Image (tube, rainbow over all chains, first blue to last red; front, top):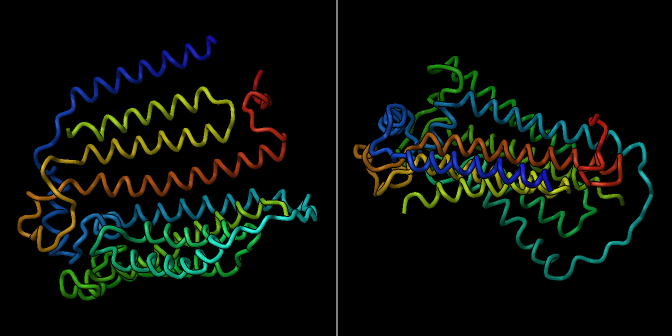
Length: 234
Length: 118
């Protein structure tokens, strides 16, 4: 009882702080200096129509590399933690699963290629439309999730996932080093010609980098899903 | 009406914290943390919003020369994109540890875990 009261008091205090913040909040009327720079220079310098993508891949490319590294660490830790115990008491507990139903089976057979295609579309067009590597990678992993929903005992090849992940990570870093050699600095996307503004083959190396980020993120999410699915004793 | 997104974000943070502090089941706590995470992201995006402007994507409707006066702040959006992905990684790790705890103790009730309590 007293614990709930303390929680209530804490939340009340936080709510008061939030109210104060909101009352004092004055929406900006113009872009600040950084955003102004990005808005004015992203199109001319990099040729990317989507300014958010330009920021993520080129201006703040190092942050994206760090982010991908954090994701890689998370998926590795999940694999390590889950693999440790399951070998010890892996019981042959052949549980009979009910069939997943005609709708889900046929639907997933129809939808999985389409979802993969859509994921590839999203990360290839990251520099033109809303979307990009992270979103596309998440869509790719959702195809794996659909397959797991259809058949919870399905096993994905960890070797294939690891190969896709390592190769795309290596290419990502390699393109960054190429930027250091051929253009202005690490992860500079101007190593390829800028192309026509607003077409698929434009914005230098941004579509290339973002595609490999998408593959890497998709592989990492799929490996997380696969590891979590393998905890299902079967 | 511009404050609706920000107010929703703050309310989601409060709801998530309430759920995380009052629930005893670890899975429910993880879901609550996810709700609070969504609230933080919503507040961040709302800070970057400016009235009457459009998404930071240049095309025929938003010409390059006019961009600085027509688009909203792209930096919070890039930030939130990062935050969402990292949040998903953290959620997956929390679920993994919840599974390990369940394997060890056979329960998900947080009050049964007294190893670090004195």
